[in-house]
Length: 277
Ligand SMILES: *[C@@H]1O[C@H](CO)[C@@H](O)[C@H](O)[C@H]1NC(C)=O
Ligand SMILES: *[C@@H]1O[C@H](CO)[C@@H](O)[C@H](O)[C@H]1NC(C)=O
Ligand SMILES: *[C@@H]1O[C@H](CO)[C@@H](O)[C@H](O)[C@H]1NC(C)=O
Image 1 (cartoon, rainbow, N blue to C red):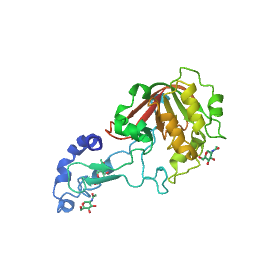
Image 2: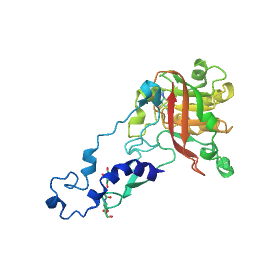
Image 3: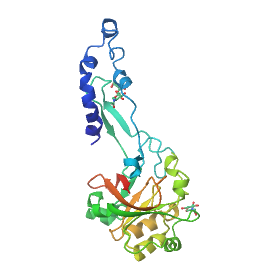
Image 4: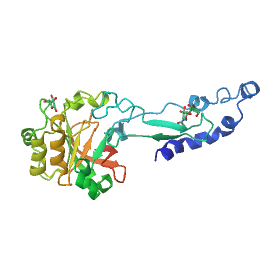
């Protein structure tokens, strides 16, 4: 996937300057000093191309990108140094190839990602409950973005106080994590807000929620990392979407669309998620 998406958009641009970049570099500067692109074969193309626009919101505010950009500086669960270098360019134009073709290495729970039931249940792993088995209907449809009280982790009492109506099947929980900009800090912070065991159990037993979205790397509070995950994943009906970017999105009702990779055998996968008004 990385190969085609990275190489392809530049292919057309590339062909227009093919003759220039592939001409032997030896005598270029002296023979054609005024032809753009012959001065420095490495950077010539980049200099002519306007900088790309990077957006969080599309379609005049109707579409919100709620996935985090994957960067070397983003946090990884339990790590001080962030995810670090994840992308390499073994084949590159600068090294004489026709195209740039990168390779990447990522933890499957990097950035905005989904958890499959096999993440915390070994017997589900053996039985094949990987991310390829997650229900796209749960990951796509009407969703409520709610603000959680900022002074507590998500307990049963907090869940009850949110008064989420029966019938609501997808909820994105915005917490103190967003205010603290934790997903933008390289160093993992175990004081993030998440579900306590009783909060997860309350949700499973008293609501129709099947998609649980949260704004840091784990839906479970650090102290209940195991227990809350076990509550959520036991039924194999609840899908956790973790590491969402909920900054500057008004609370309310949207359509959520989350599409992860079909990584056979994987208990997690990075995912792209958007909200549409
Ligand atoms: C291609 O790779 C070079 C490094 O060889 C890099 O500087 C350049 O930005 C890349 N171009 C594109 C279009 O990605
Ligand atoms: C080009 O290849 C050489 C030798 O493998 C390597 O040392 C260098 O880093 C490469 N440069 C780029 C831009 O990929
Ligand atoms: C939530 O729980 C974590 C431990 O998992 C704790 O460090 C943090 O202070 C708690 N947050 C709030 C707002 O109570």
